[in-house]
Image (cartoon, rainbow, N blue to C red; front, side, top):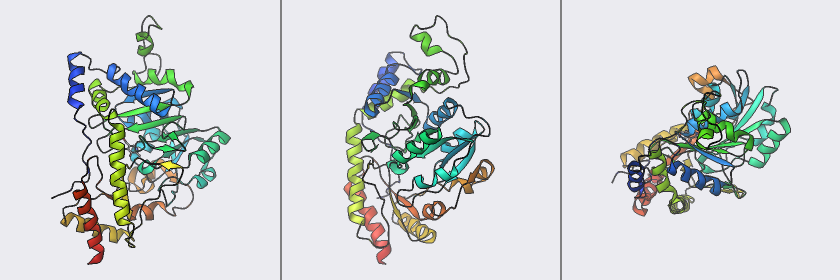
Length: 375
Ligand SMILES: *Cc1c(COP(=O)(O)O)cnc(C)c1O
């Protein structure tokens, strides 16, 4: 038995809804399935507007346009994140200012943000790693004090919350991912922009429609549509939304199943003194996006990866800190000391976790990890 690292979620209704979209002859974006998904998220997250996008990367790019990032502006974020968190802003000419992470949650250290703010700071990107929230009260307080925006990269945070508020709905704008490696997928690629701040709603629809006021035209609010702003093709196909719709109908089942697997790992590995387990602060309800363990060192992690592989278990790590990457050197600076970013990222190892992972599979992963330390 080989255990892959990830299996995309499938609920069984995906083809049915895709067929509905095909028979209705509605394939381009903005149709009934995008509207259904958007309404689902608007009510679930209590946000003013949700817009389906082709990816979380695209949603982040829309966010960068919406807050009007100009060349030379600075955007603060953790270095321990996916490239899209920074690329979206670099594309608009921003300089990225990285701040260290907290070793407990692997999220940006909210205590170190204020010192990184300059007169050029435009926004803070809060990345909710593993679906565990950043310390949003503090981050919003800093942002309000300095008059800067907060963009939540909640790619991993669908169905998770902070003090009862959905991740992605707390900052000015929030971005979700429906990539096949995330908890819910729209058929491999997909994303969503959550708009909390009403001032952005109308312009977001224009930017998503290639810079035209096409959506106002469809609502009968203008008699012809034309080019009114910058924009791009940020509209996903109805096939993607139909796929996602099938997953959202089972959102609670998927969430509970993942949490059960997460707890199973936690309970069976917590007595192992050689590893550290994830920390979920009391204000956070996470969504079991990932289960990771932390080893003593990079060397120990590499040995464990090889051992697990020999035992048919795929594990993974990720995020070479962006400030030490080739492009990171060109487009960013690290503010303050890298006390935890590099060292903690080198110790982290993700175990297989997906919807419908069986107990037998989990037992095999757990036994393999334990036996590595017992030989
Ligand atoms: C997955 C991910 C993204 C990118 O999502 P796409 O939908 O693949 O563009 C961005 N940020 C974080 C933190 C992610 O985990």
